Image (cartoon, rainbow, N blue to C red):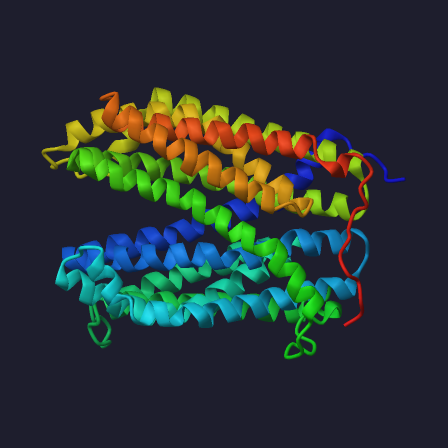
Amino acid sequence: MNDRQSYPALARALLVLGLPLIGSNLAQMALHVTDTVMLGWYGTVELASAVLGASTFFIIFILGSGFALAVTPLVASALGRGDETRVRRDTRMGMWLSVLFGLCVLPLTWWSGPIFAAAGQEPDVVRLGQDYLRIAGFGMIPALLVMVLKSFLSAFERAGIVLWATLAGVVLNVLLNWMLIFGNWGAPELGVRGAAVASVATQMLTLAVLVLYSARHPVLAPYQLFRRFWRPDPPALAQVFRLGWPIGLTGLFESGLFEATAIMMGWIGAVELASHGIALELAAIAFMVHLGLSNAATVRAGRAFGQDDMRGLRDGALVAMAMSLIFGAVVVVVFVLFPAPLIGLFLDPANPQGPQIIAYGSALLAVAALFQIADATQVMGLGLLRGVHDTRAPMIIASVSYWLIGIPVSYVLAFKAGMGGVGLWLGLVVGLVVAAVLLMVRFWRGRWFSGRPADSDVRTPA
């Protein structure tokens, strides 16, 4: 019988794990922001091409990261039942699948120019976008391996090193951007290619730090994570693949929802698209907190699931939901009371269209306040379901909620009902609410609360 933890103790445990994950998520956003700002200083065409290349890289990365994210619940459950061998096997095969995925998509990143041209991009943007992606594509494997090790370390509730490694990467990225984009300190002036080189170097540094930490830390070294790394492990490979591919597609469906909204906002007008970008950036910053709490909830749920501690699973889920909802309520208040100052942070005071962008963006932030609670609930539902190794049903829920409901409602409200950009965002609210409700119903009515064995994985030695 497992001892029941108090709600304050569960909240403390979630925060100890969640705060470094939140910090690393925000630091990862800082990498994107610094690239955008520094290339914006260099040139408009270079910025546009890098944004195109980086967006393409991100979409591919989201799809491939499902195998890495599957490692978190698998390792957490294995730790919950004291299966050290399984920890090594699942993590190792997560790395195998990440490397295989990175190799498979390398031709896509190398010959991306024709794809950009077919999408109607300008010739200079196509050329520079392909230049960027040809270099950045070699960072796909280290970036995915970083995600695997982040999942491994999170399952051990040792996410602090991930935060520090990511912060070190931000510093390195800024320095290398300054050198290689602009040709400072005697370095060649590479422009957009310099930004790509800086990104790959940053990913390699982060990977090296996490590999050394995982191999040498006294608590982690006994797991011999890299022992016989070259040996295939078909049962573990199949298990990580089975759990991981739906996670990747779920992330693709969700990120695709916001990409599609940006495209439709561009049909409305430039001011509206600029307002959309700023409001979405603010919403994304808040989302990083919910995502960090969700990742922590996956670990805590996975531990309870591995121990057959359904009371602990239920109590931990309630605490995680409450904490995410409290933060969501705070964000709602901030978005409603202070929209203009928040949006003004992203604008040059001399911009003649600034007042229009602030006015329109304030309306969008009011809608963003509406979907804060739904967004918090849906990402927490995803995290809890991953903790109990349920990923296929969430994938189906995401595809239906976002693409069969959210996008059509956005289109109808924006262009048929004449509500414009506000209508687009109200469609997002509808899709997120549907996803939140279905995911929570799925979790709380799941078979894991009705006597299902904690784990049905194959457990053969490796």
